[in-house]
Image 1 (tube, helix red, strand yellow):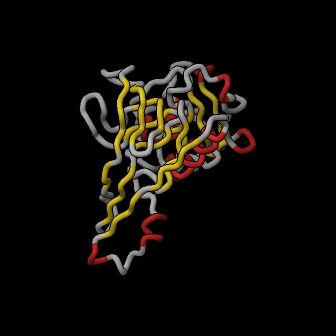
Image 2: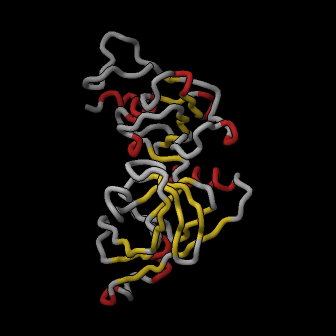
Image 3: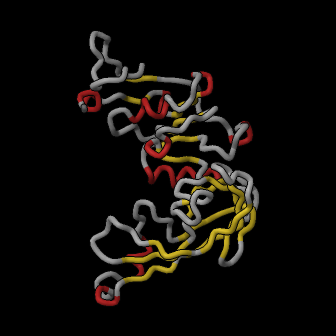
Amino acid sequence: MLLPPGQGKLHNRPRPDSCTKGTGLLPLGQVRHPMRPGALVPKNDCVHKLNLQIQNMMLTNSRTYKSVDIMDPSQALLFPVEFLNSLEPTGIPSRNLQLKVGVPIMLLRNLDPPELCNGTRLSVKNLYSHLIGATILTGCAKGRDVFIPWIPLIPIDLPFNFKRIQFPVRLAFAVSINEAQGQSQKIVGIYLQNSCFSHGQLYVACSRVGHPTNLYILAPGGKTRNYNDIFRTT
């Protein structure tokens, strides 16, 4: 049972302890629209793990791109390269970016608006040494072939100056529930190995589709808890 819009209160309805729906996520081979985000996940670290897990199911060869991490010379002795390589700042691609031809990716920066903007989805067509050839899947330039270059990326949520040179993309089989807000999909799977942690998050995920038969939820034991402190949050 989902909360009605408002202040996060159940009014006179009994408060549910758990909810269930469906029998699990669709197998990769049964997804009719593999280039759309088919899985929604509460946390970003789970998104990364699930994307790699789905990509590994593909039988094609992968290519790994290693970033160049650069530190301000005045702080280089305080933050060694090994530490920089381990960082996963929000909105910044991983140190090791593993891709295969045919996988969906999402752009993390504005490169050439309005065709190539932050959030644009593409399908990998070719993997070169210093370029990624891809086909745009969404937006006004849908179907256009483009090249994605290496660019410097500077995180804004760290207390020191740090630059990562990498392709501004990440895998997009799965996306976080927060990133899916405002989108409508024909079919969605919600991956709840970790329960939703904020008010309205489960509602946002379930409301991405227009019919319950197109919604699949995977949770331990077939159930996911609705915590009382979430209901009390306004």
